Amino acid sequence: MAVLPIRMIGDPILRAPAQRLDAAQLATPAAQAFVDDLIETMHAANGAGLAAPQVGRAWAIAAVHVHQNPRYPYKPDVPLTVFVNPTLTPLSEETAWLYEGCLSVPDLRGRVRRHMHVRVDALDRHGRPLSFEAHGLTAGTYQHELDHLQGRLFVDGVVDPASFSTWANFDRFHREAFVAEATALVARYGG
Image (cartoon, rainbow, N blue to C red; front, side, top):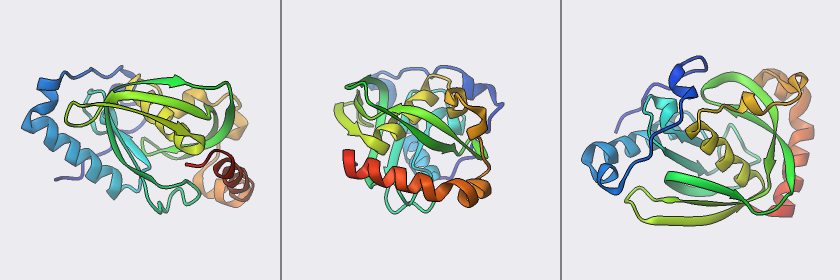
């Protein structure tokens, strides 16, 4: 396994829709090795998720894993999930404004409106059908990663540019209030 370089905002690959893979493409040793590298890179960067375009591959593959994450200590744990060719369906009209950051947009946070109850339909890393529901902050995490596969970054969803903040200023001025909001969302929706 290898830790791959993360592409930064301005790189055209982050703005292109990712290519879907069929089961035969996904089964190749190269694709499976790439999935391992994607996971390794996500963990090395303390990311809650990572999408293939963020490491230079225009494939519709992403991973999410949250376990005592130092960047997002308020997020509930999410088991390692690799999803390929995903579609996302909102299951309610309920939304919340979440402060988001991104490994491809270093040192910036901003508020994005996310659905609080979604269903993800995809393939797992072995080409088997995968379908699950996500709620609250976890639903926001999946939406963030699926955006990457459609060529969108969280900055595109920030409606109020006044919500942009460096990480240091988020910690200084906004963390306490947002952690209270996040805690309430976790209490309401669970993980």
